[in-house]
Length: 366
Image (cartoon, rainbow, N blue to C red; front, side, top):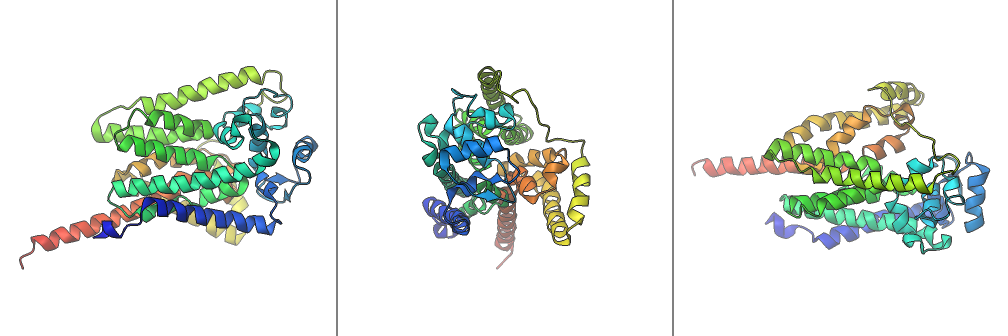
């Protein structure tokens, strides 16, 4: 009966697209329908970066907060093959680090064919379509596990992915590729999953962690070691970084590194003082951390692939620097897979309780 009441996957995807488009439209309206708001340019950005964008788009919206990845992906999308790195890559703060996240700007840039006036819109459209596709994939996974297809909305309603949309980040496409890889893997298309995990890693390198979580679950549950889902994305990343090293040789800043990590728990401890300056911020951040802590034992007991794929992100969060932990925008993006896995865990637990209750009633004498 419940299966017949489930929404079709396309409807879940369309609803997810409508939700995401509404969020984007609200932000566009607040900034006079100027798409450059998603380029996330700030007052503190360098004159070189400002000139680069203004030469291609004219006047741009300057944000006071949450100035993040969009401006870098805009530059990468204008030259995704790094054929003119002295022009485009020169405005990246850390060219190698930024350059390894290549899939999102490559798609948004039409593989180098779109002009900047199109790129500024296609960055947003690519993220909106990725959220809709992610909702459909999560819906398919839910149906495969006997859960409601409406769980697919846990993708567009994921707080970390909403922030990714806001700042023009690559995490939406990266996580959607992970969901596609997971769906391929659990439905028996194991040959396809490694390539989809490679796509995820080339959108955001930390998505290799999702493959690691799935690898561990398969080893624990089945005694199998699906090495390809981990090795393939690592090889793809290494090959692309080698290409970047050649193309960016001599570009200012190309040799610079950036370390988002710290000693275990040091980042959270350092960030706590920053949170404490604002009671509302402190309450919100502590609540989010508590949710993540409560998630760990639930995920470990569940044996749900989507939950185990998210578990390594919790481990990674323990060694993130204070710069990441200070802002809710940053640490929720880093933990985004957790916030989609939680509704799956809750729904799965409820379904098991209902099933157990039905079994008990069936065993009782009339």
